[in-house]
Amino acid sequence: MARQFDFKPKKRLGQHFLTDETVLEHILSAAELGSGDTVIEVGPGLGILTEALARQGARVIAVELDSRLVALLKKRMAPFPDVKIIHADILKVTARQLLQDSLPAPEPDRGYKIIANLPYYITSPVLCRFLEAQPRPAQMVVMVQKEVGETIAAAPGKMRLLSVKIQFYSKPAIICYVPAASFYPAPKVDSVVLRLDVYSEPPIEVSDVAGFFDVVTHGFSSPRKQLRNSLAHSLEMPPGDVARLLEKAGIEAKRRAETLSLEEWRELWMTFAPFMRGLQC
Image 1: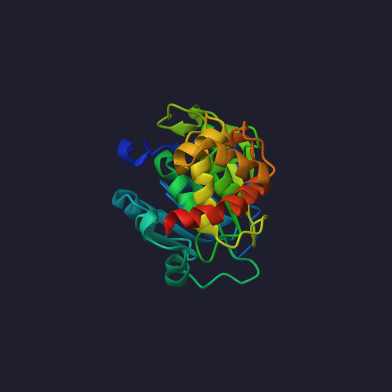
Image 2: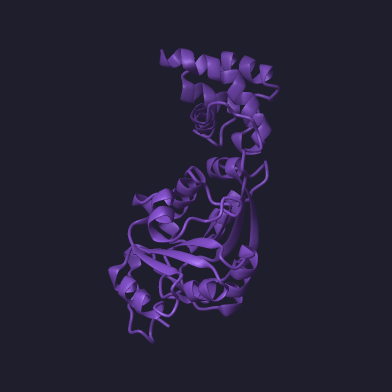
């Protein structure tokens, strides 16, 4: 397709265009689109996925940074009145702006969906931006780097800070693995299609989300260290004091951050939050 349009991908924008129609079918199947669903597509590229979404009856808001592709997309999507091409940086526009300015608002009980083949270098910022947005999407189906997708979907034992952030807001599942050869030009790594079913409310009750993630961030400050040492170093606390707080939270001091579940992070936050507020005074 890129060759057909005599289009040269820009490396600095992380442009890798999907060429495998089987993977496209997996994305569409995972999205479970109904007629009239509102979709925000990030980085539509040459419009292969955009057209497929439109043909399934979706109302598509496609946000593209590259002005060359915007012109191509507007021409290609002209037959589809429910496709809106937006020339913008996805990290500089809000979900509310896109939904209000582009198409009729989605029905309240259906929300909107994010579907995207994300450039690797903006994966985390885009996911977190939409999961923290108001309104949040009901679902996200995204193509991401294999290692990142596996981290996002990881169970306790292999968790990272990104795992906790994404799983606080959504339930992730890997739909399929995508080899590098499925793209033009081929990236240096494989990818996965990831589905995130976004919660209406987080699965754990947290009254101070910023404070909760502050504790989690301190816990992962030295992920290879035991929690006692990682928190003591990050919070500048005596290891003995940290060990006593961990015991109060019901968490062994020798465990590492990667082993904690969301529920255990909540216990940690509830135990450490009063002390951390004292540190900020």
